[in-house]
Image (cartoon, protein in one colour):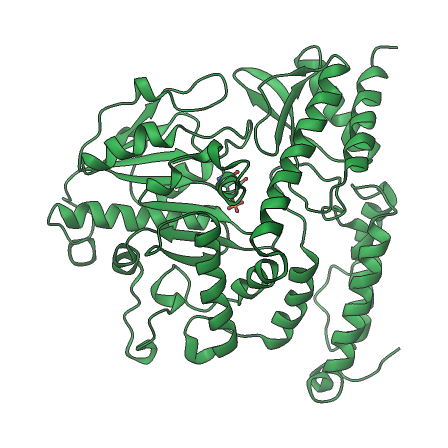
Length: 463
Ligand SMILES: Cc1ncc(COP(=O)(O)O)c(C=O)c1O
């Protein structure tokens, strides 16, 4: 065992330690394909062997790494091997996983370009390429952040301040007390992270009018409430349960013509725009004022990585300006002036690596493949008699087995079986299994094997 004292590792052993970690990571990736998706009971029990007390003194870093790998690696949820279908969890693209190793070694802080020259350039390109792939307006600005929740918050702050600015009220100068009231018209199916963002932006439920939605969770354009120039409209590309998107083209032009700000939460669904075959599902989404999306979902960037995007860069800068003499910069793009964080890791480098590796055609193929897998899964389960609740859209399958009790029992049985992992939800008052296919590593065989396991868990309850 390596005996270099912890405080001395930096000078003497850092490179060796990082190499050892990379070797362990590679072994982990290979081993994770041979075990159940959810960790075994023994692996979970072994977690108790991690010492609970703060160590009194130093331990060799190699020993800490070994403990982390030997006790920790078997207890992970194997979410990058193609059979994890919970929440909307992307896997990791190989180029991005490898780039993340370099990004970790670089330890660049992309708050300001002067701190991180290479990383800032990659970040800038990745943000521009993402907007281009998503078909968003050429002048829009995109900024990396930790995920769609923070991207939603960032955009809502920009929207709030812009709407009030147009009403002659500076939030920067006068705060929110006494400000002209804003109204929100939100899809009744808007994601919970957007509600959380509204709360953080100082906009309470009383200001929110819900727009009615249909059986697939899409806003009904004909019943959309009236909006004006004090209204923030909240739509979504990709309902977290059904994958369906709002009818943007029918709503956005009229709302913007009346002066409303339209924000779209497209955490995963916005990526439909990157595929010529799926683009029609989000037609008109490019007409909005702001968009939130994730790189760590459909694009398979490592955690945590999202993008806040604004049509008018000045609106984002107004809300996010960072006023400190020591951070003043002449740079056109500085993340500390475009988002909530100052210091931050170089997330954009991993997305750059993905886009540089796959190009436009590769990303379109990724989007199409996951959509095809979802359709395939729905067909296999539907043909066997399961109730596919909503026509499958994008990468989401919503399915039910007999009744609420049976559905929950099948979900529990699938999780215990460990062939794959699916979660539960409620859809329009009924329990359902959510199957979210978000890992580029998923193959047709994974879908067939997983469908067979789900059906086996269902049928075993009927014997
Ligand atoms: C539609 C939608 N919006 C927002 C989020 C939140 O994203 P994040 O977990 O990256 O903050 C999710 C997560 O699943 C989502 O599906």
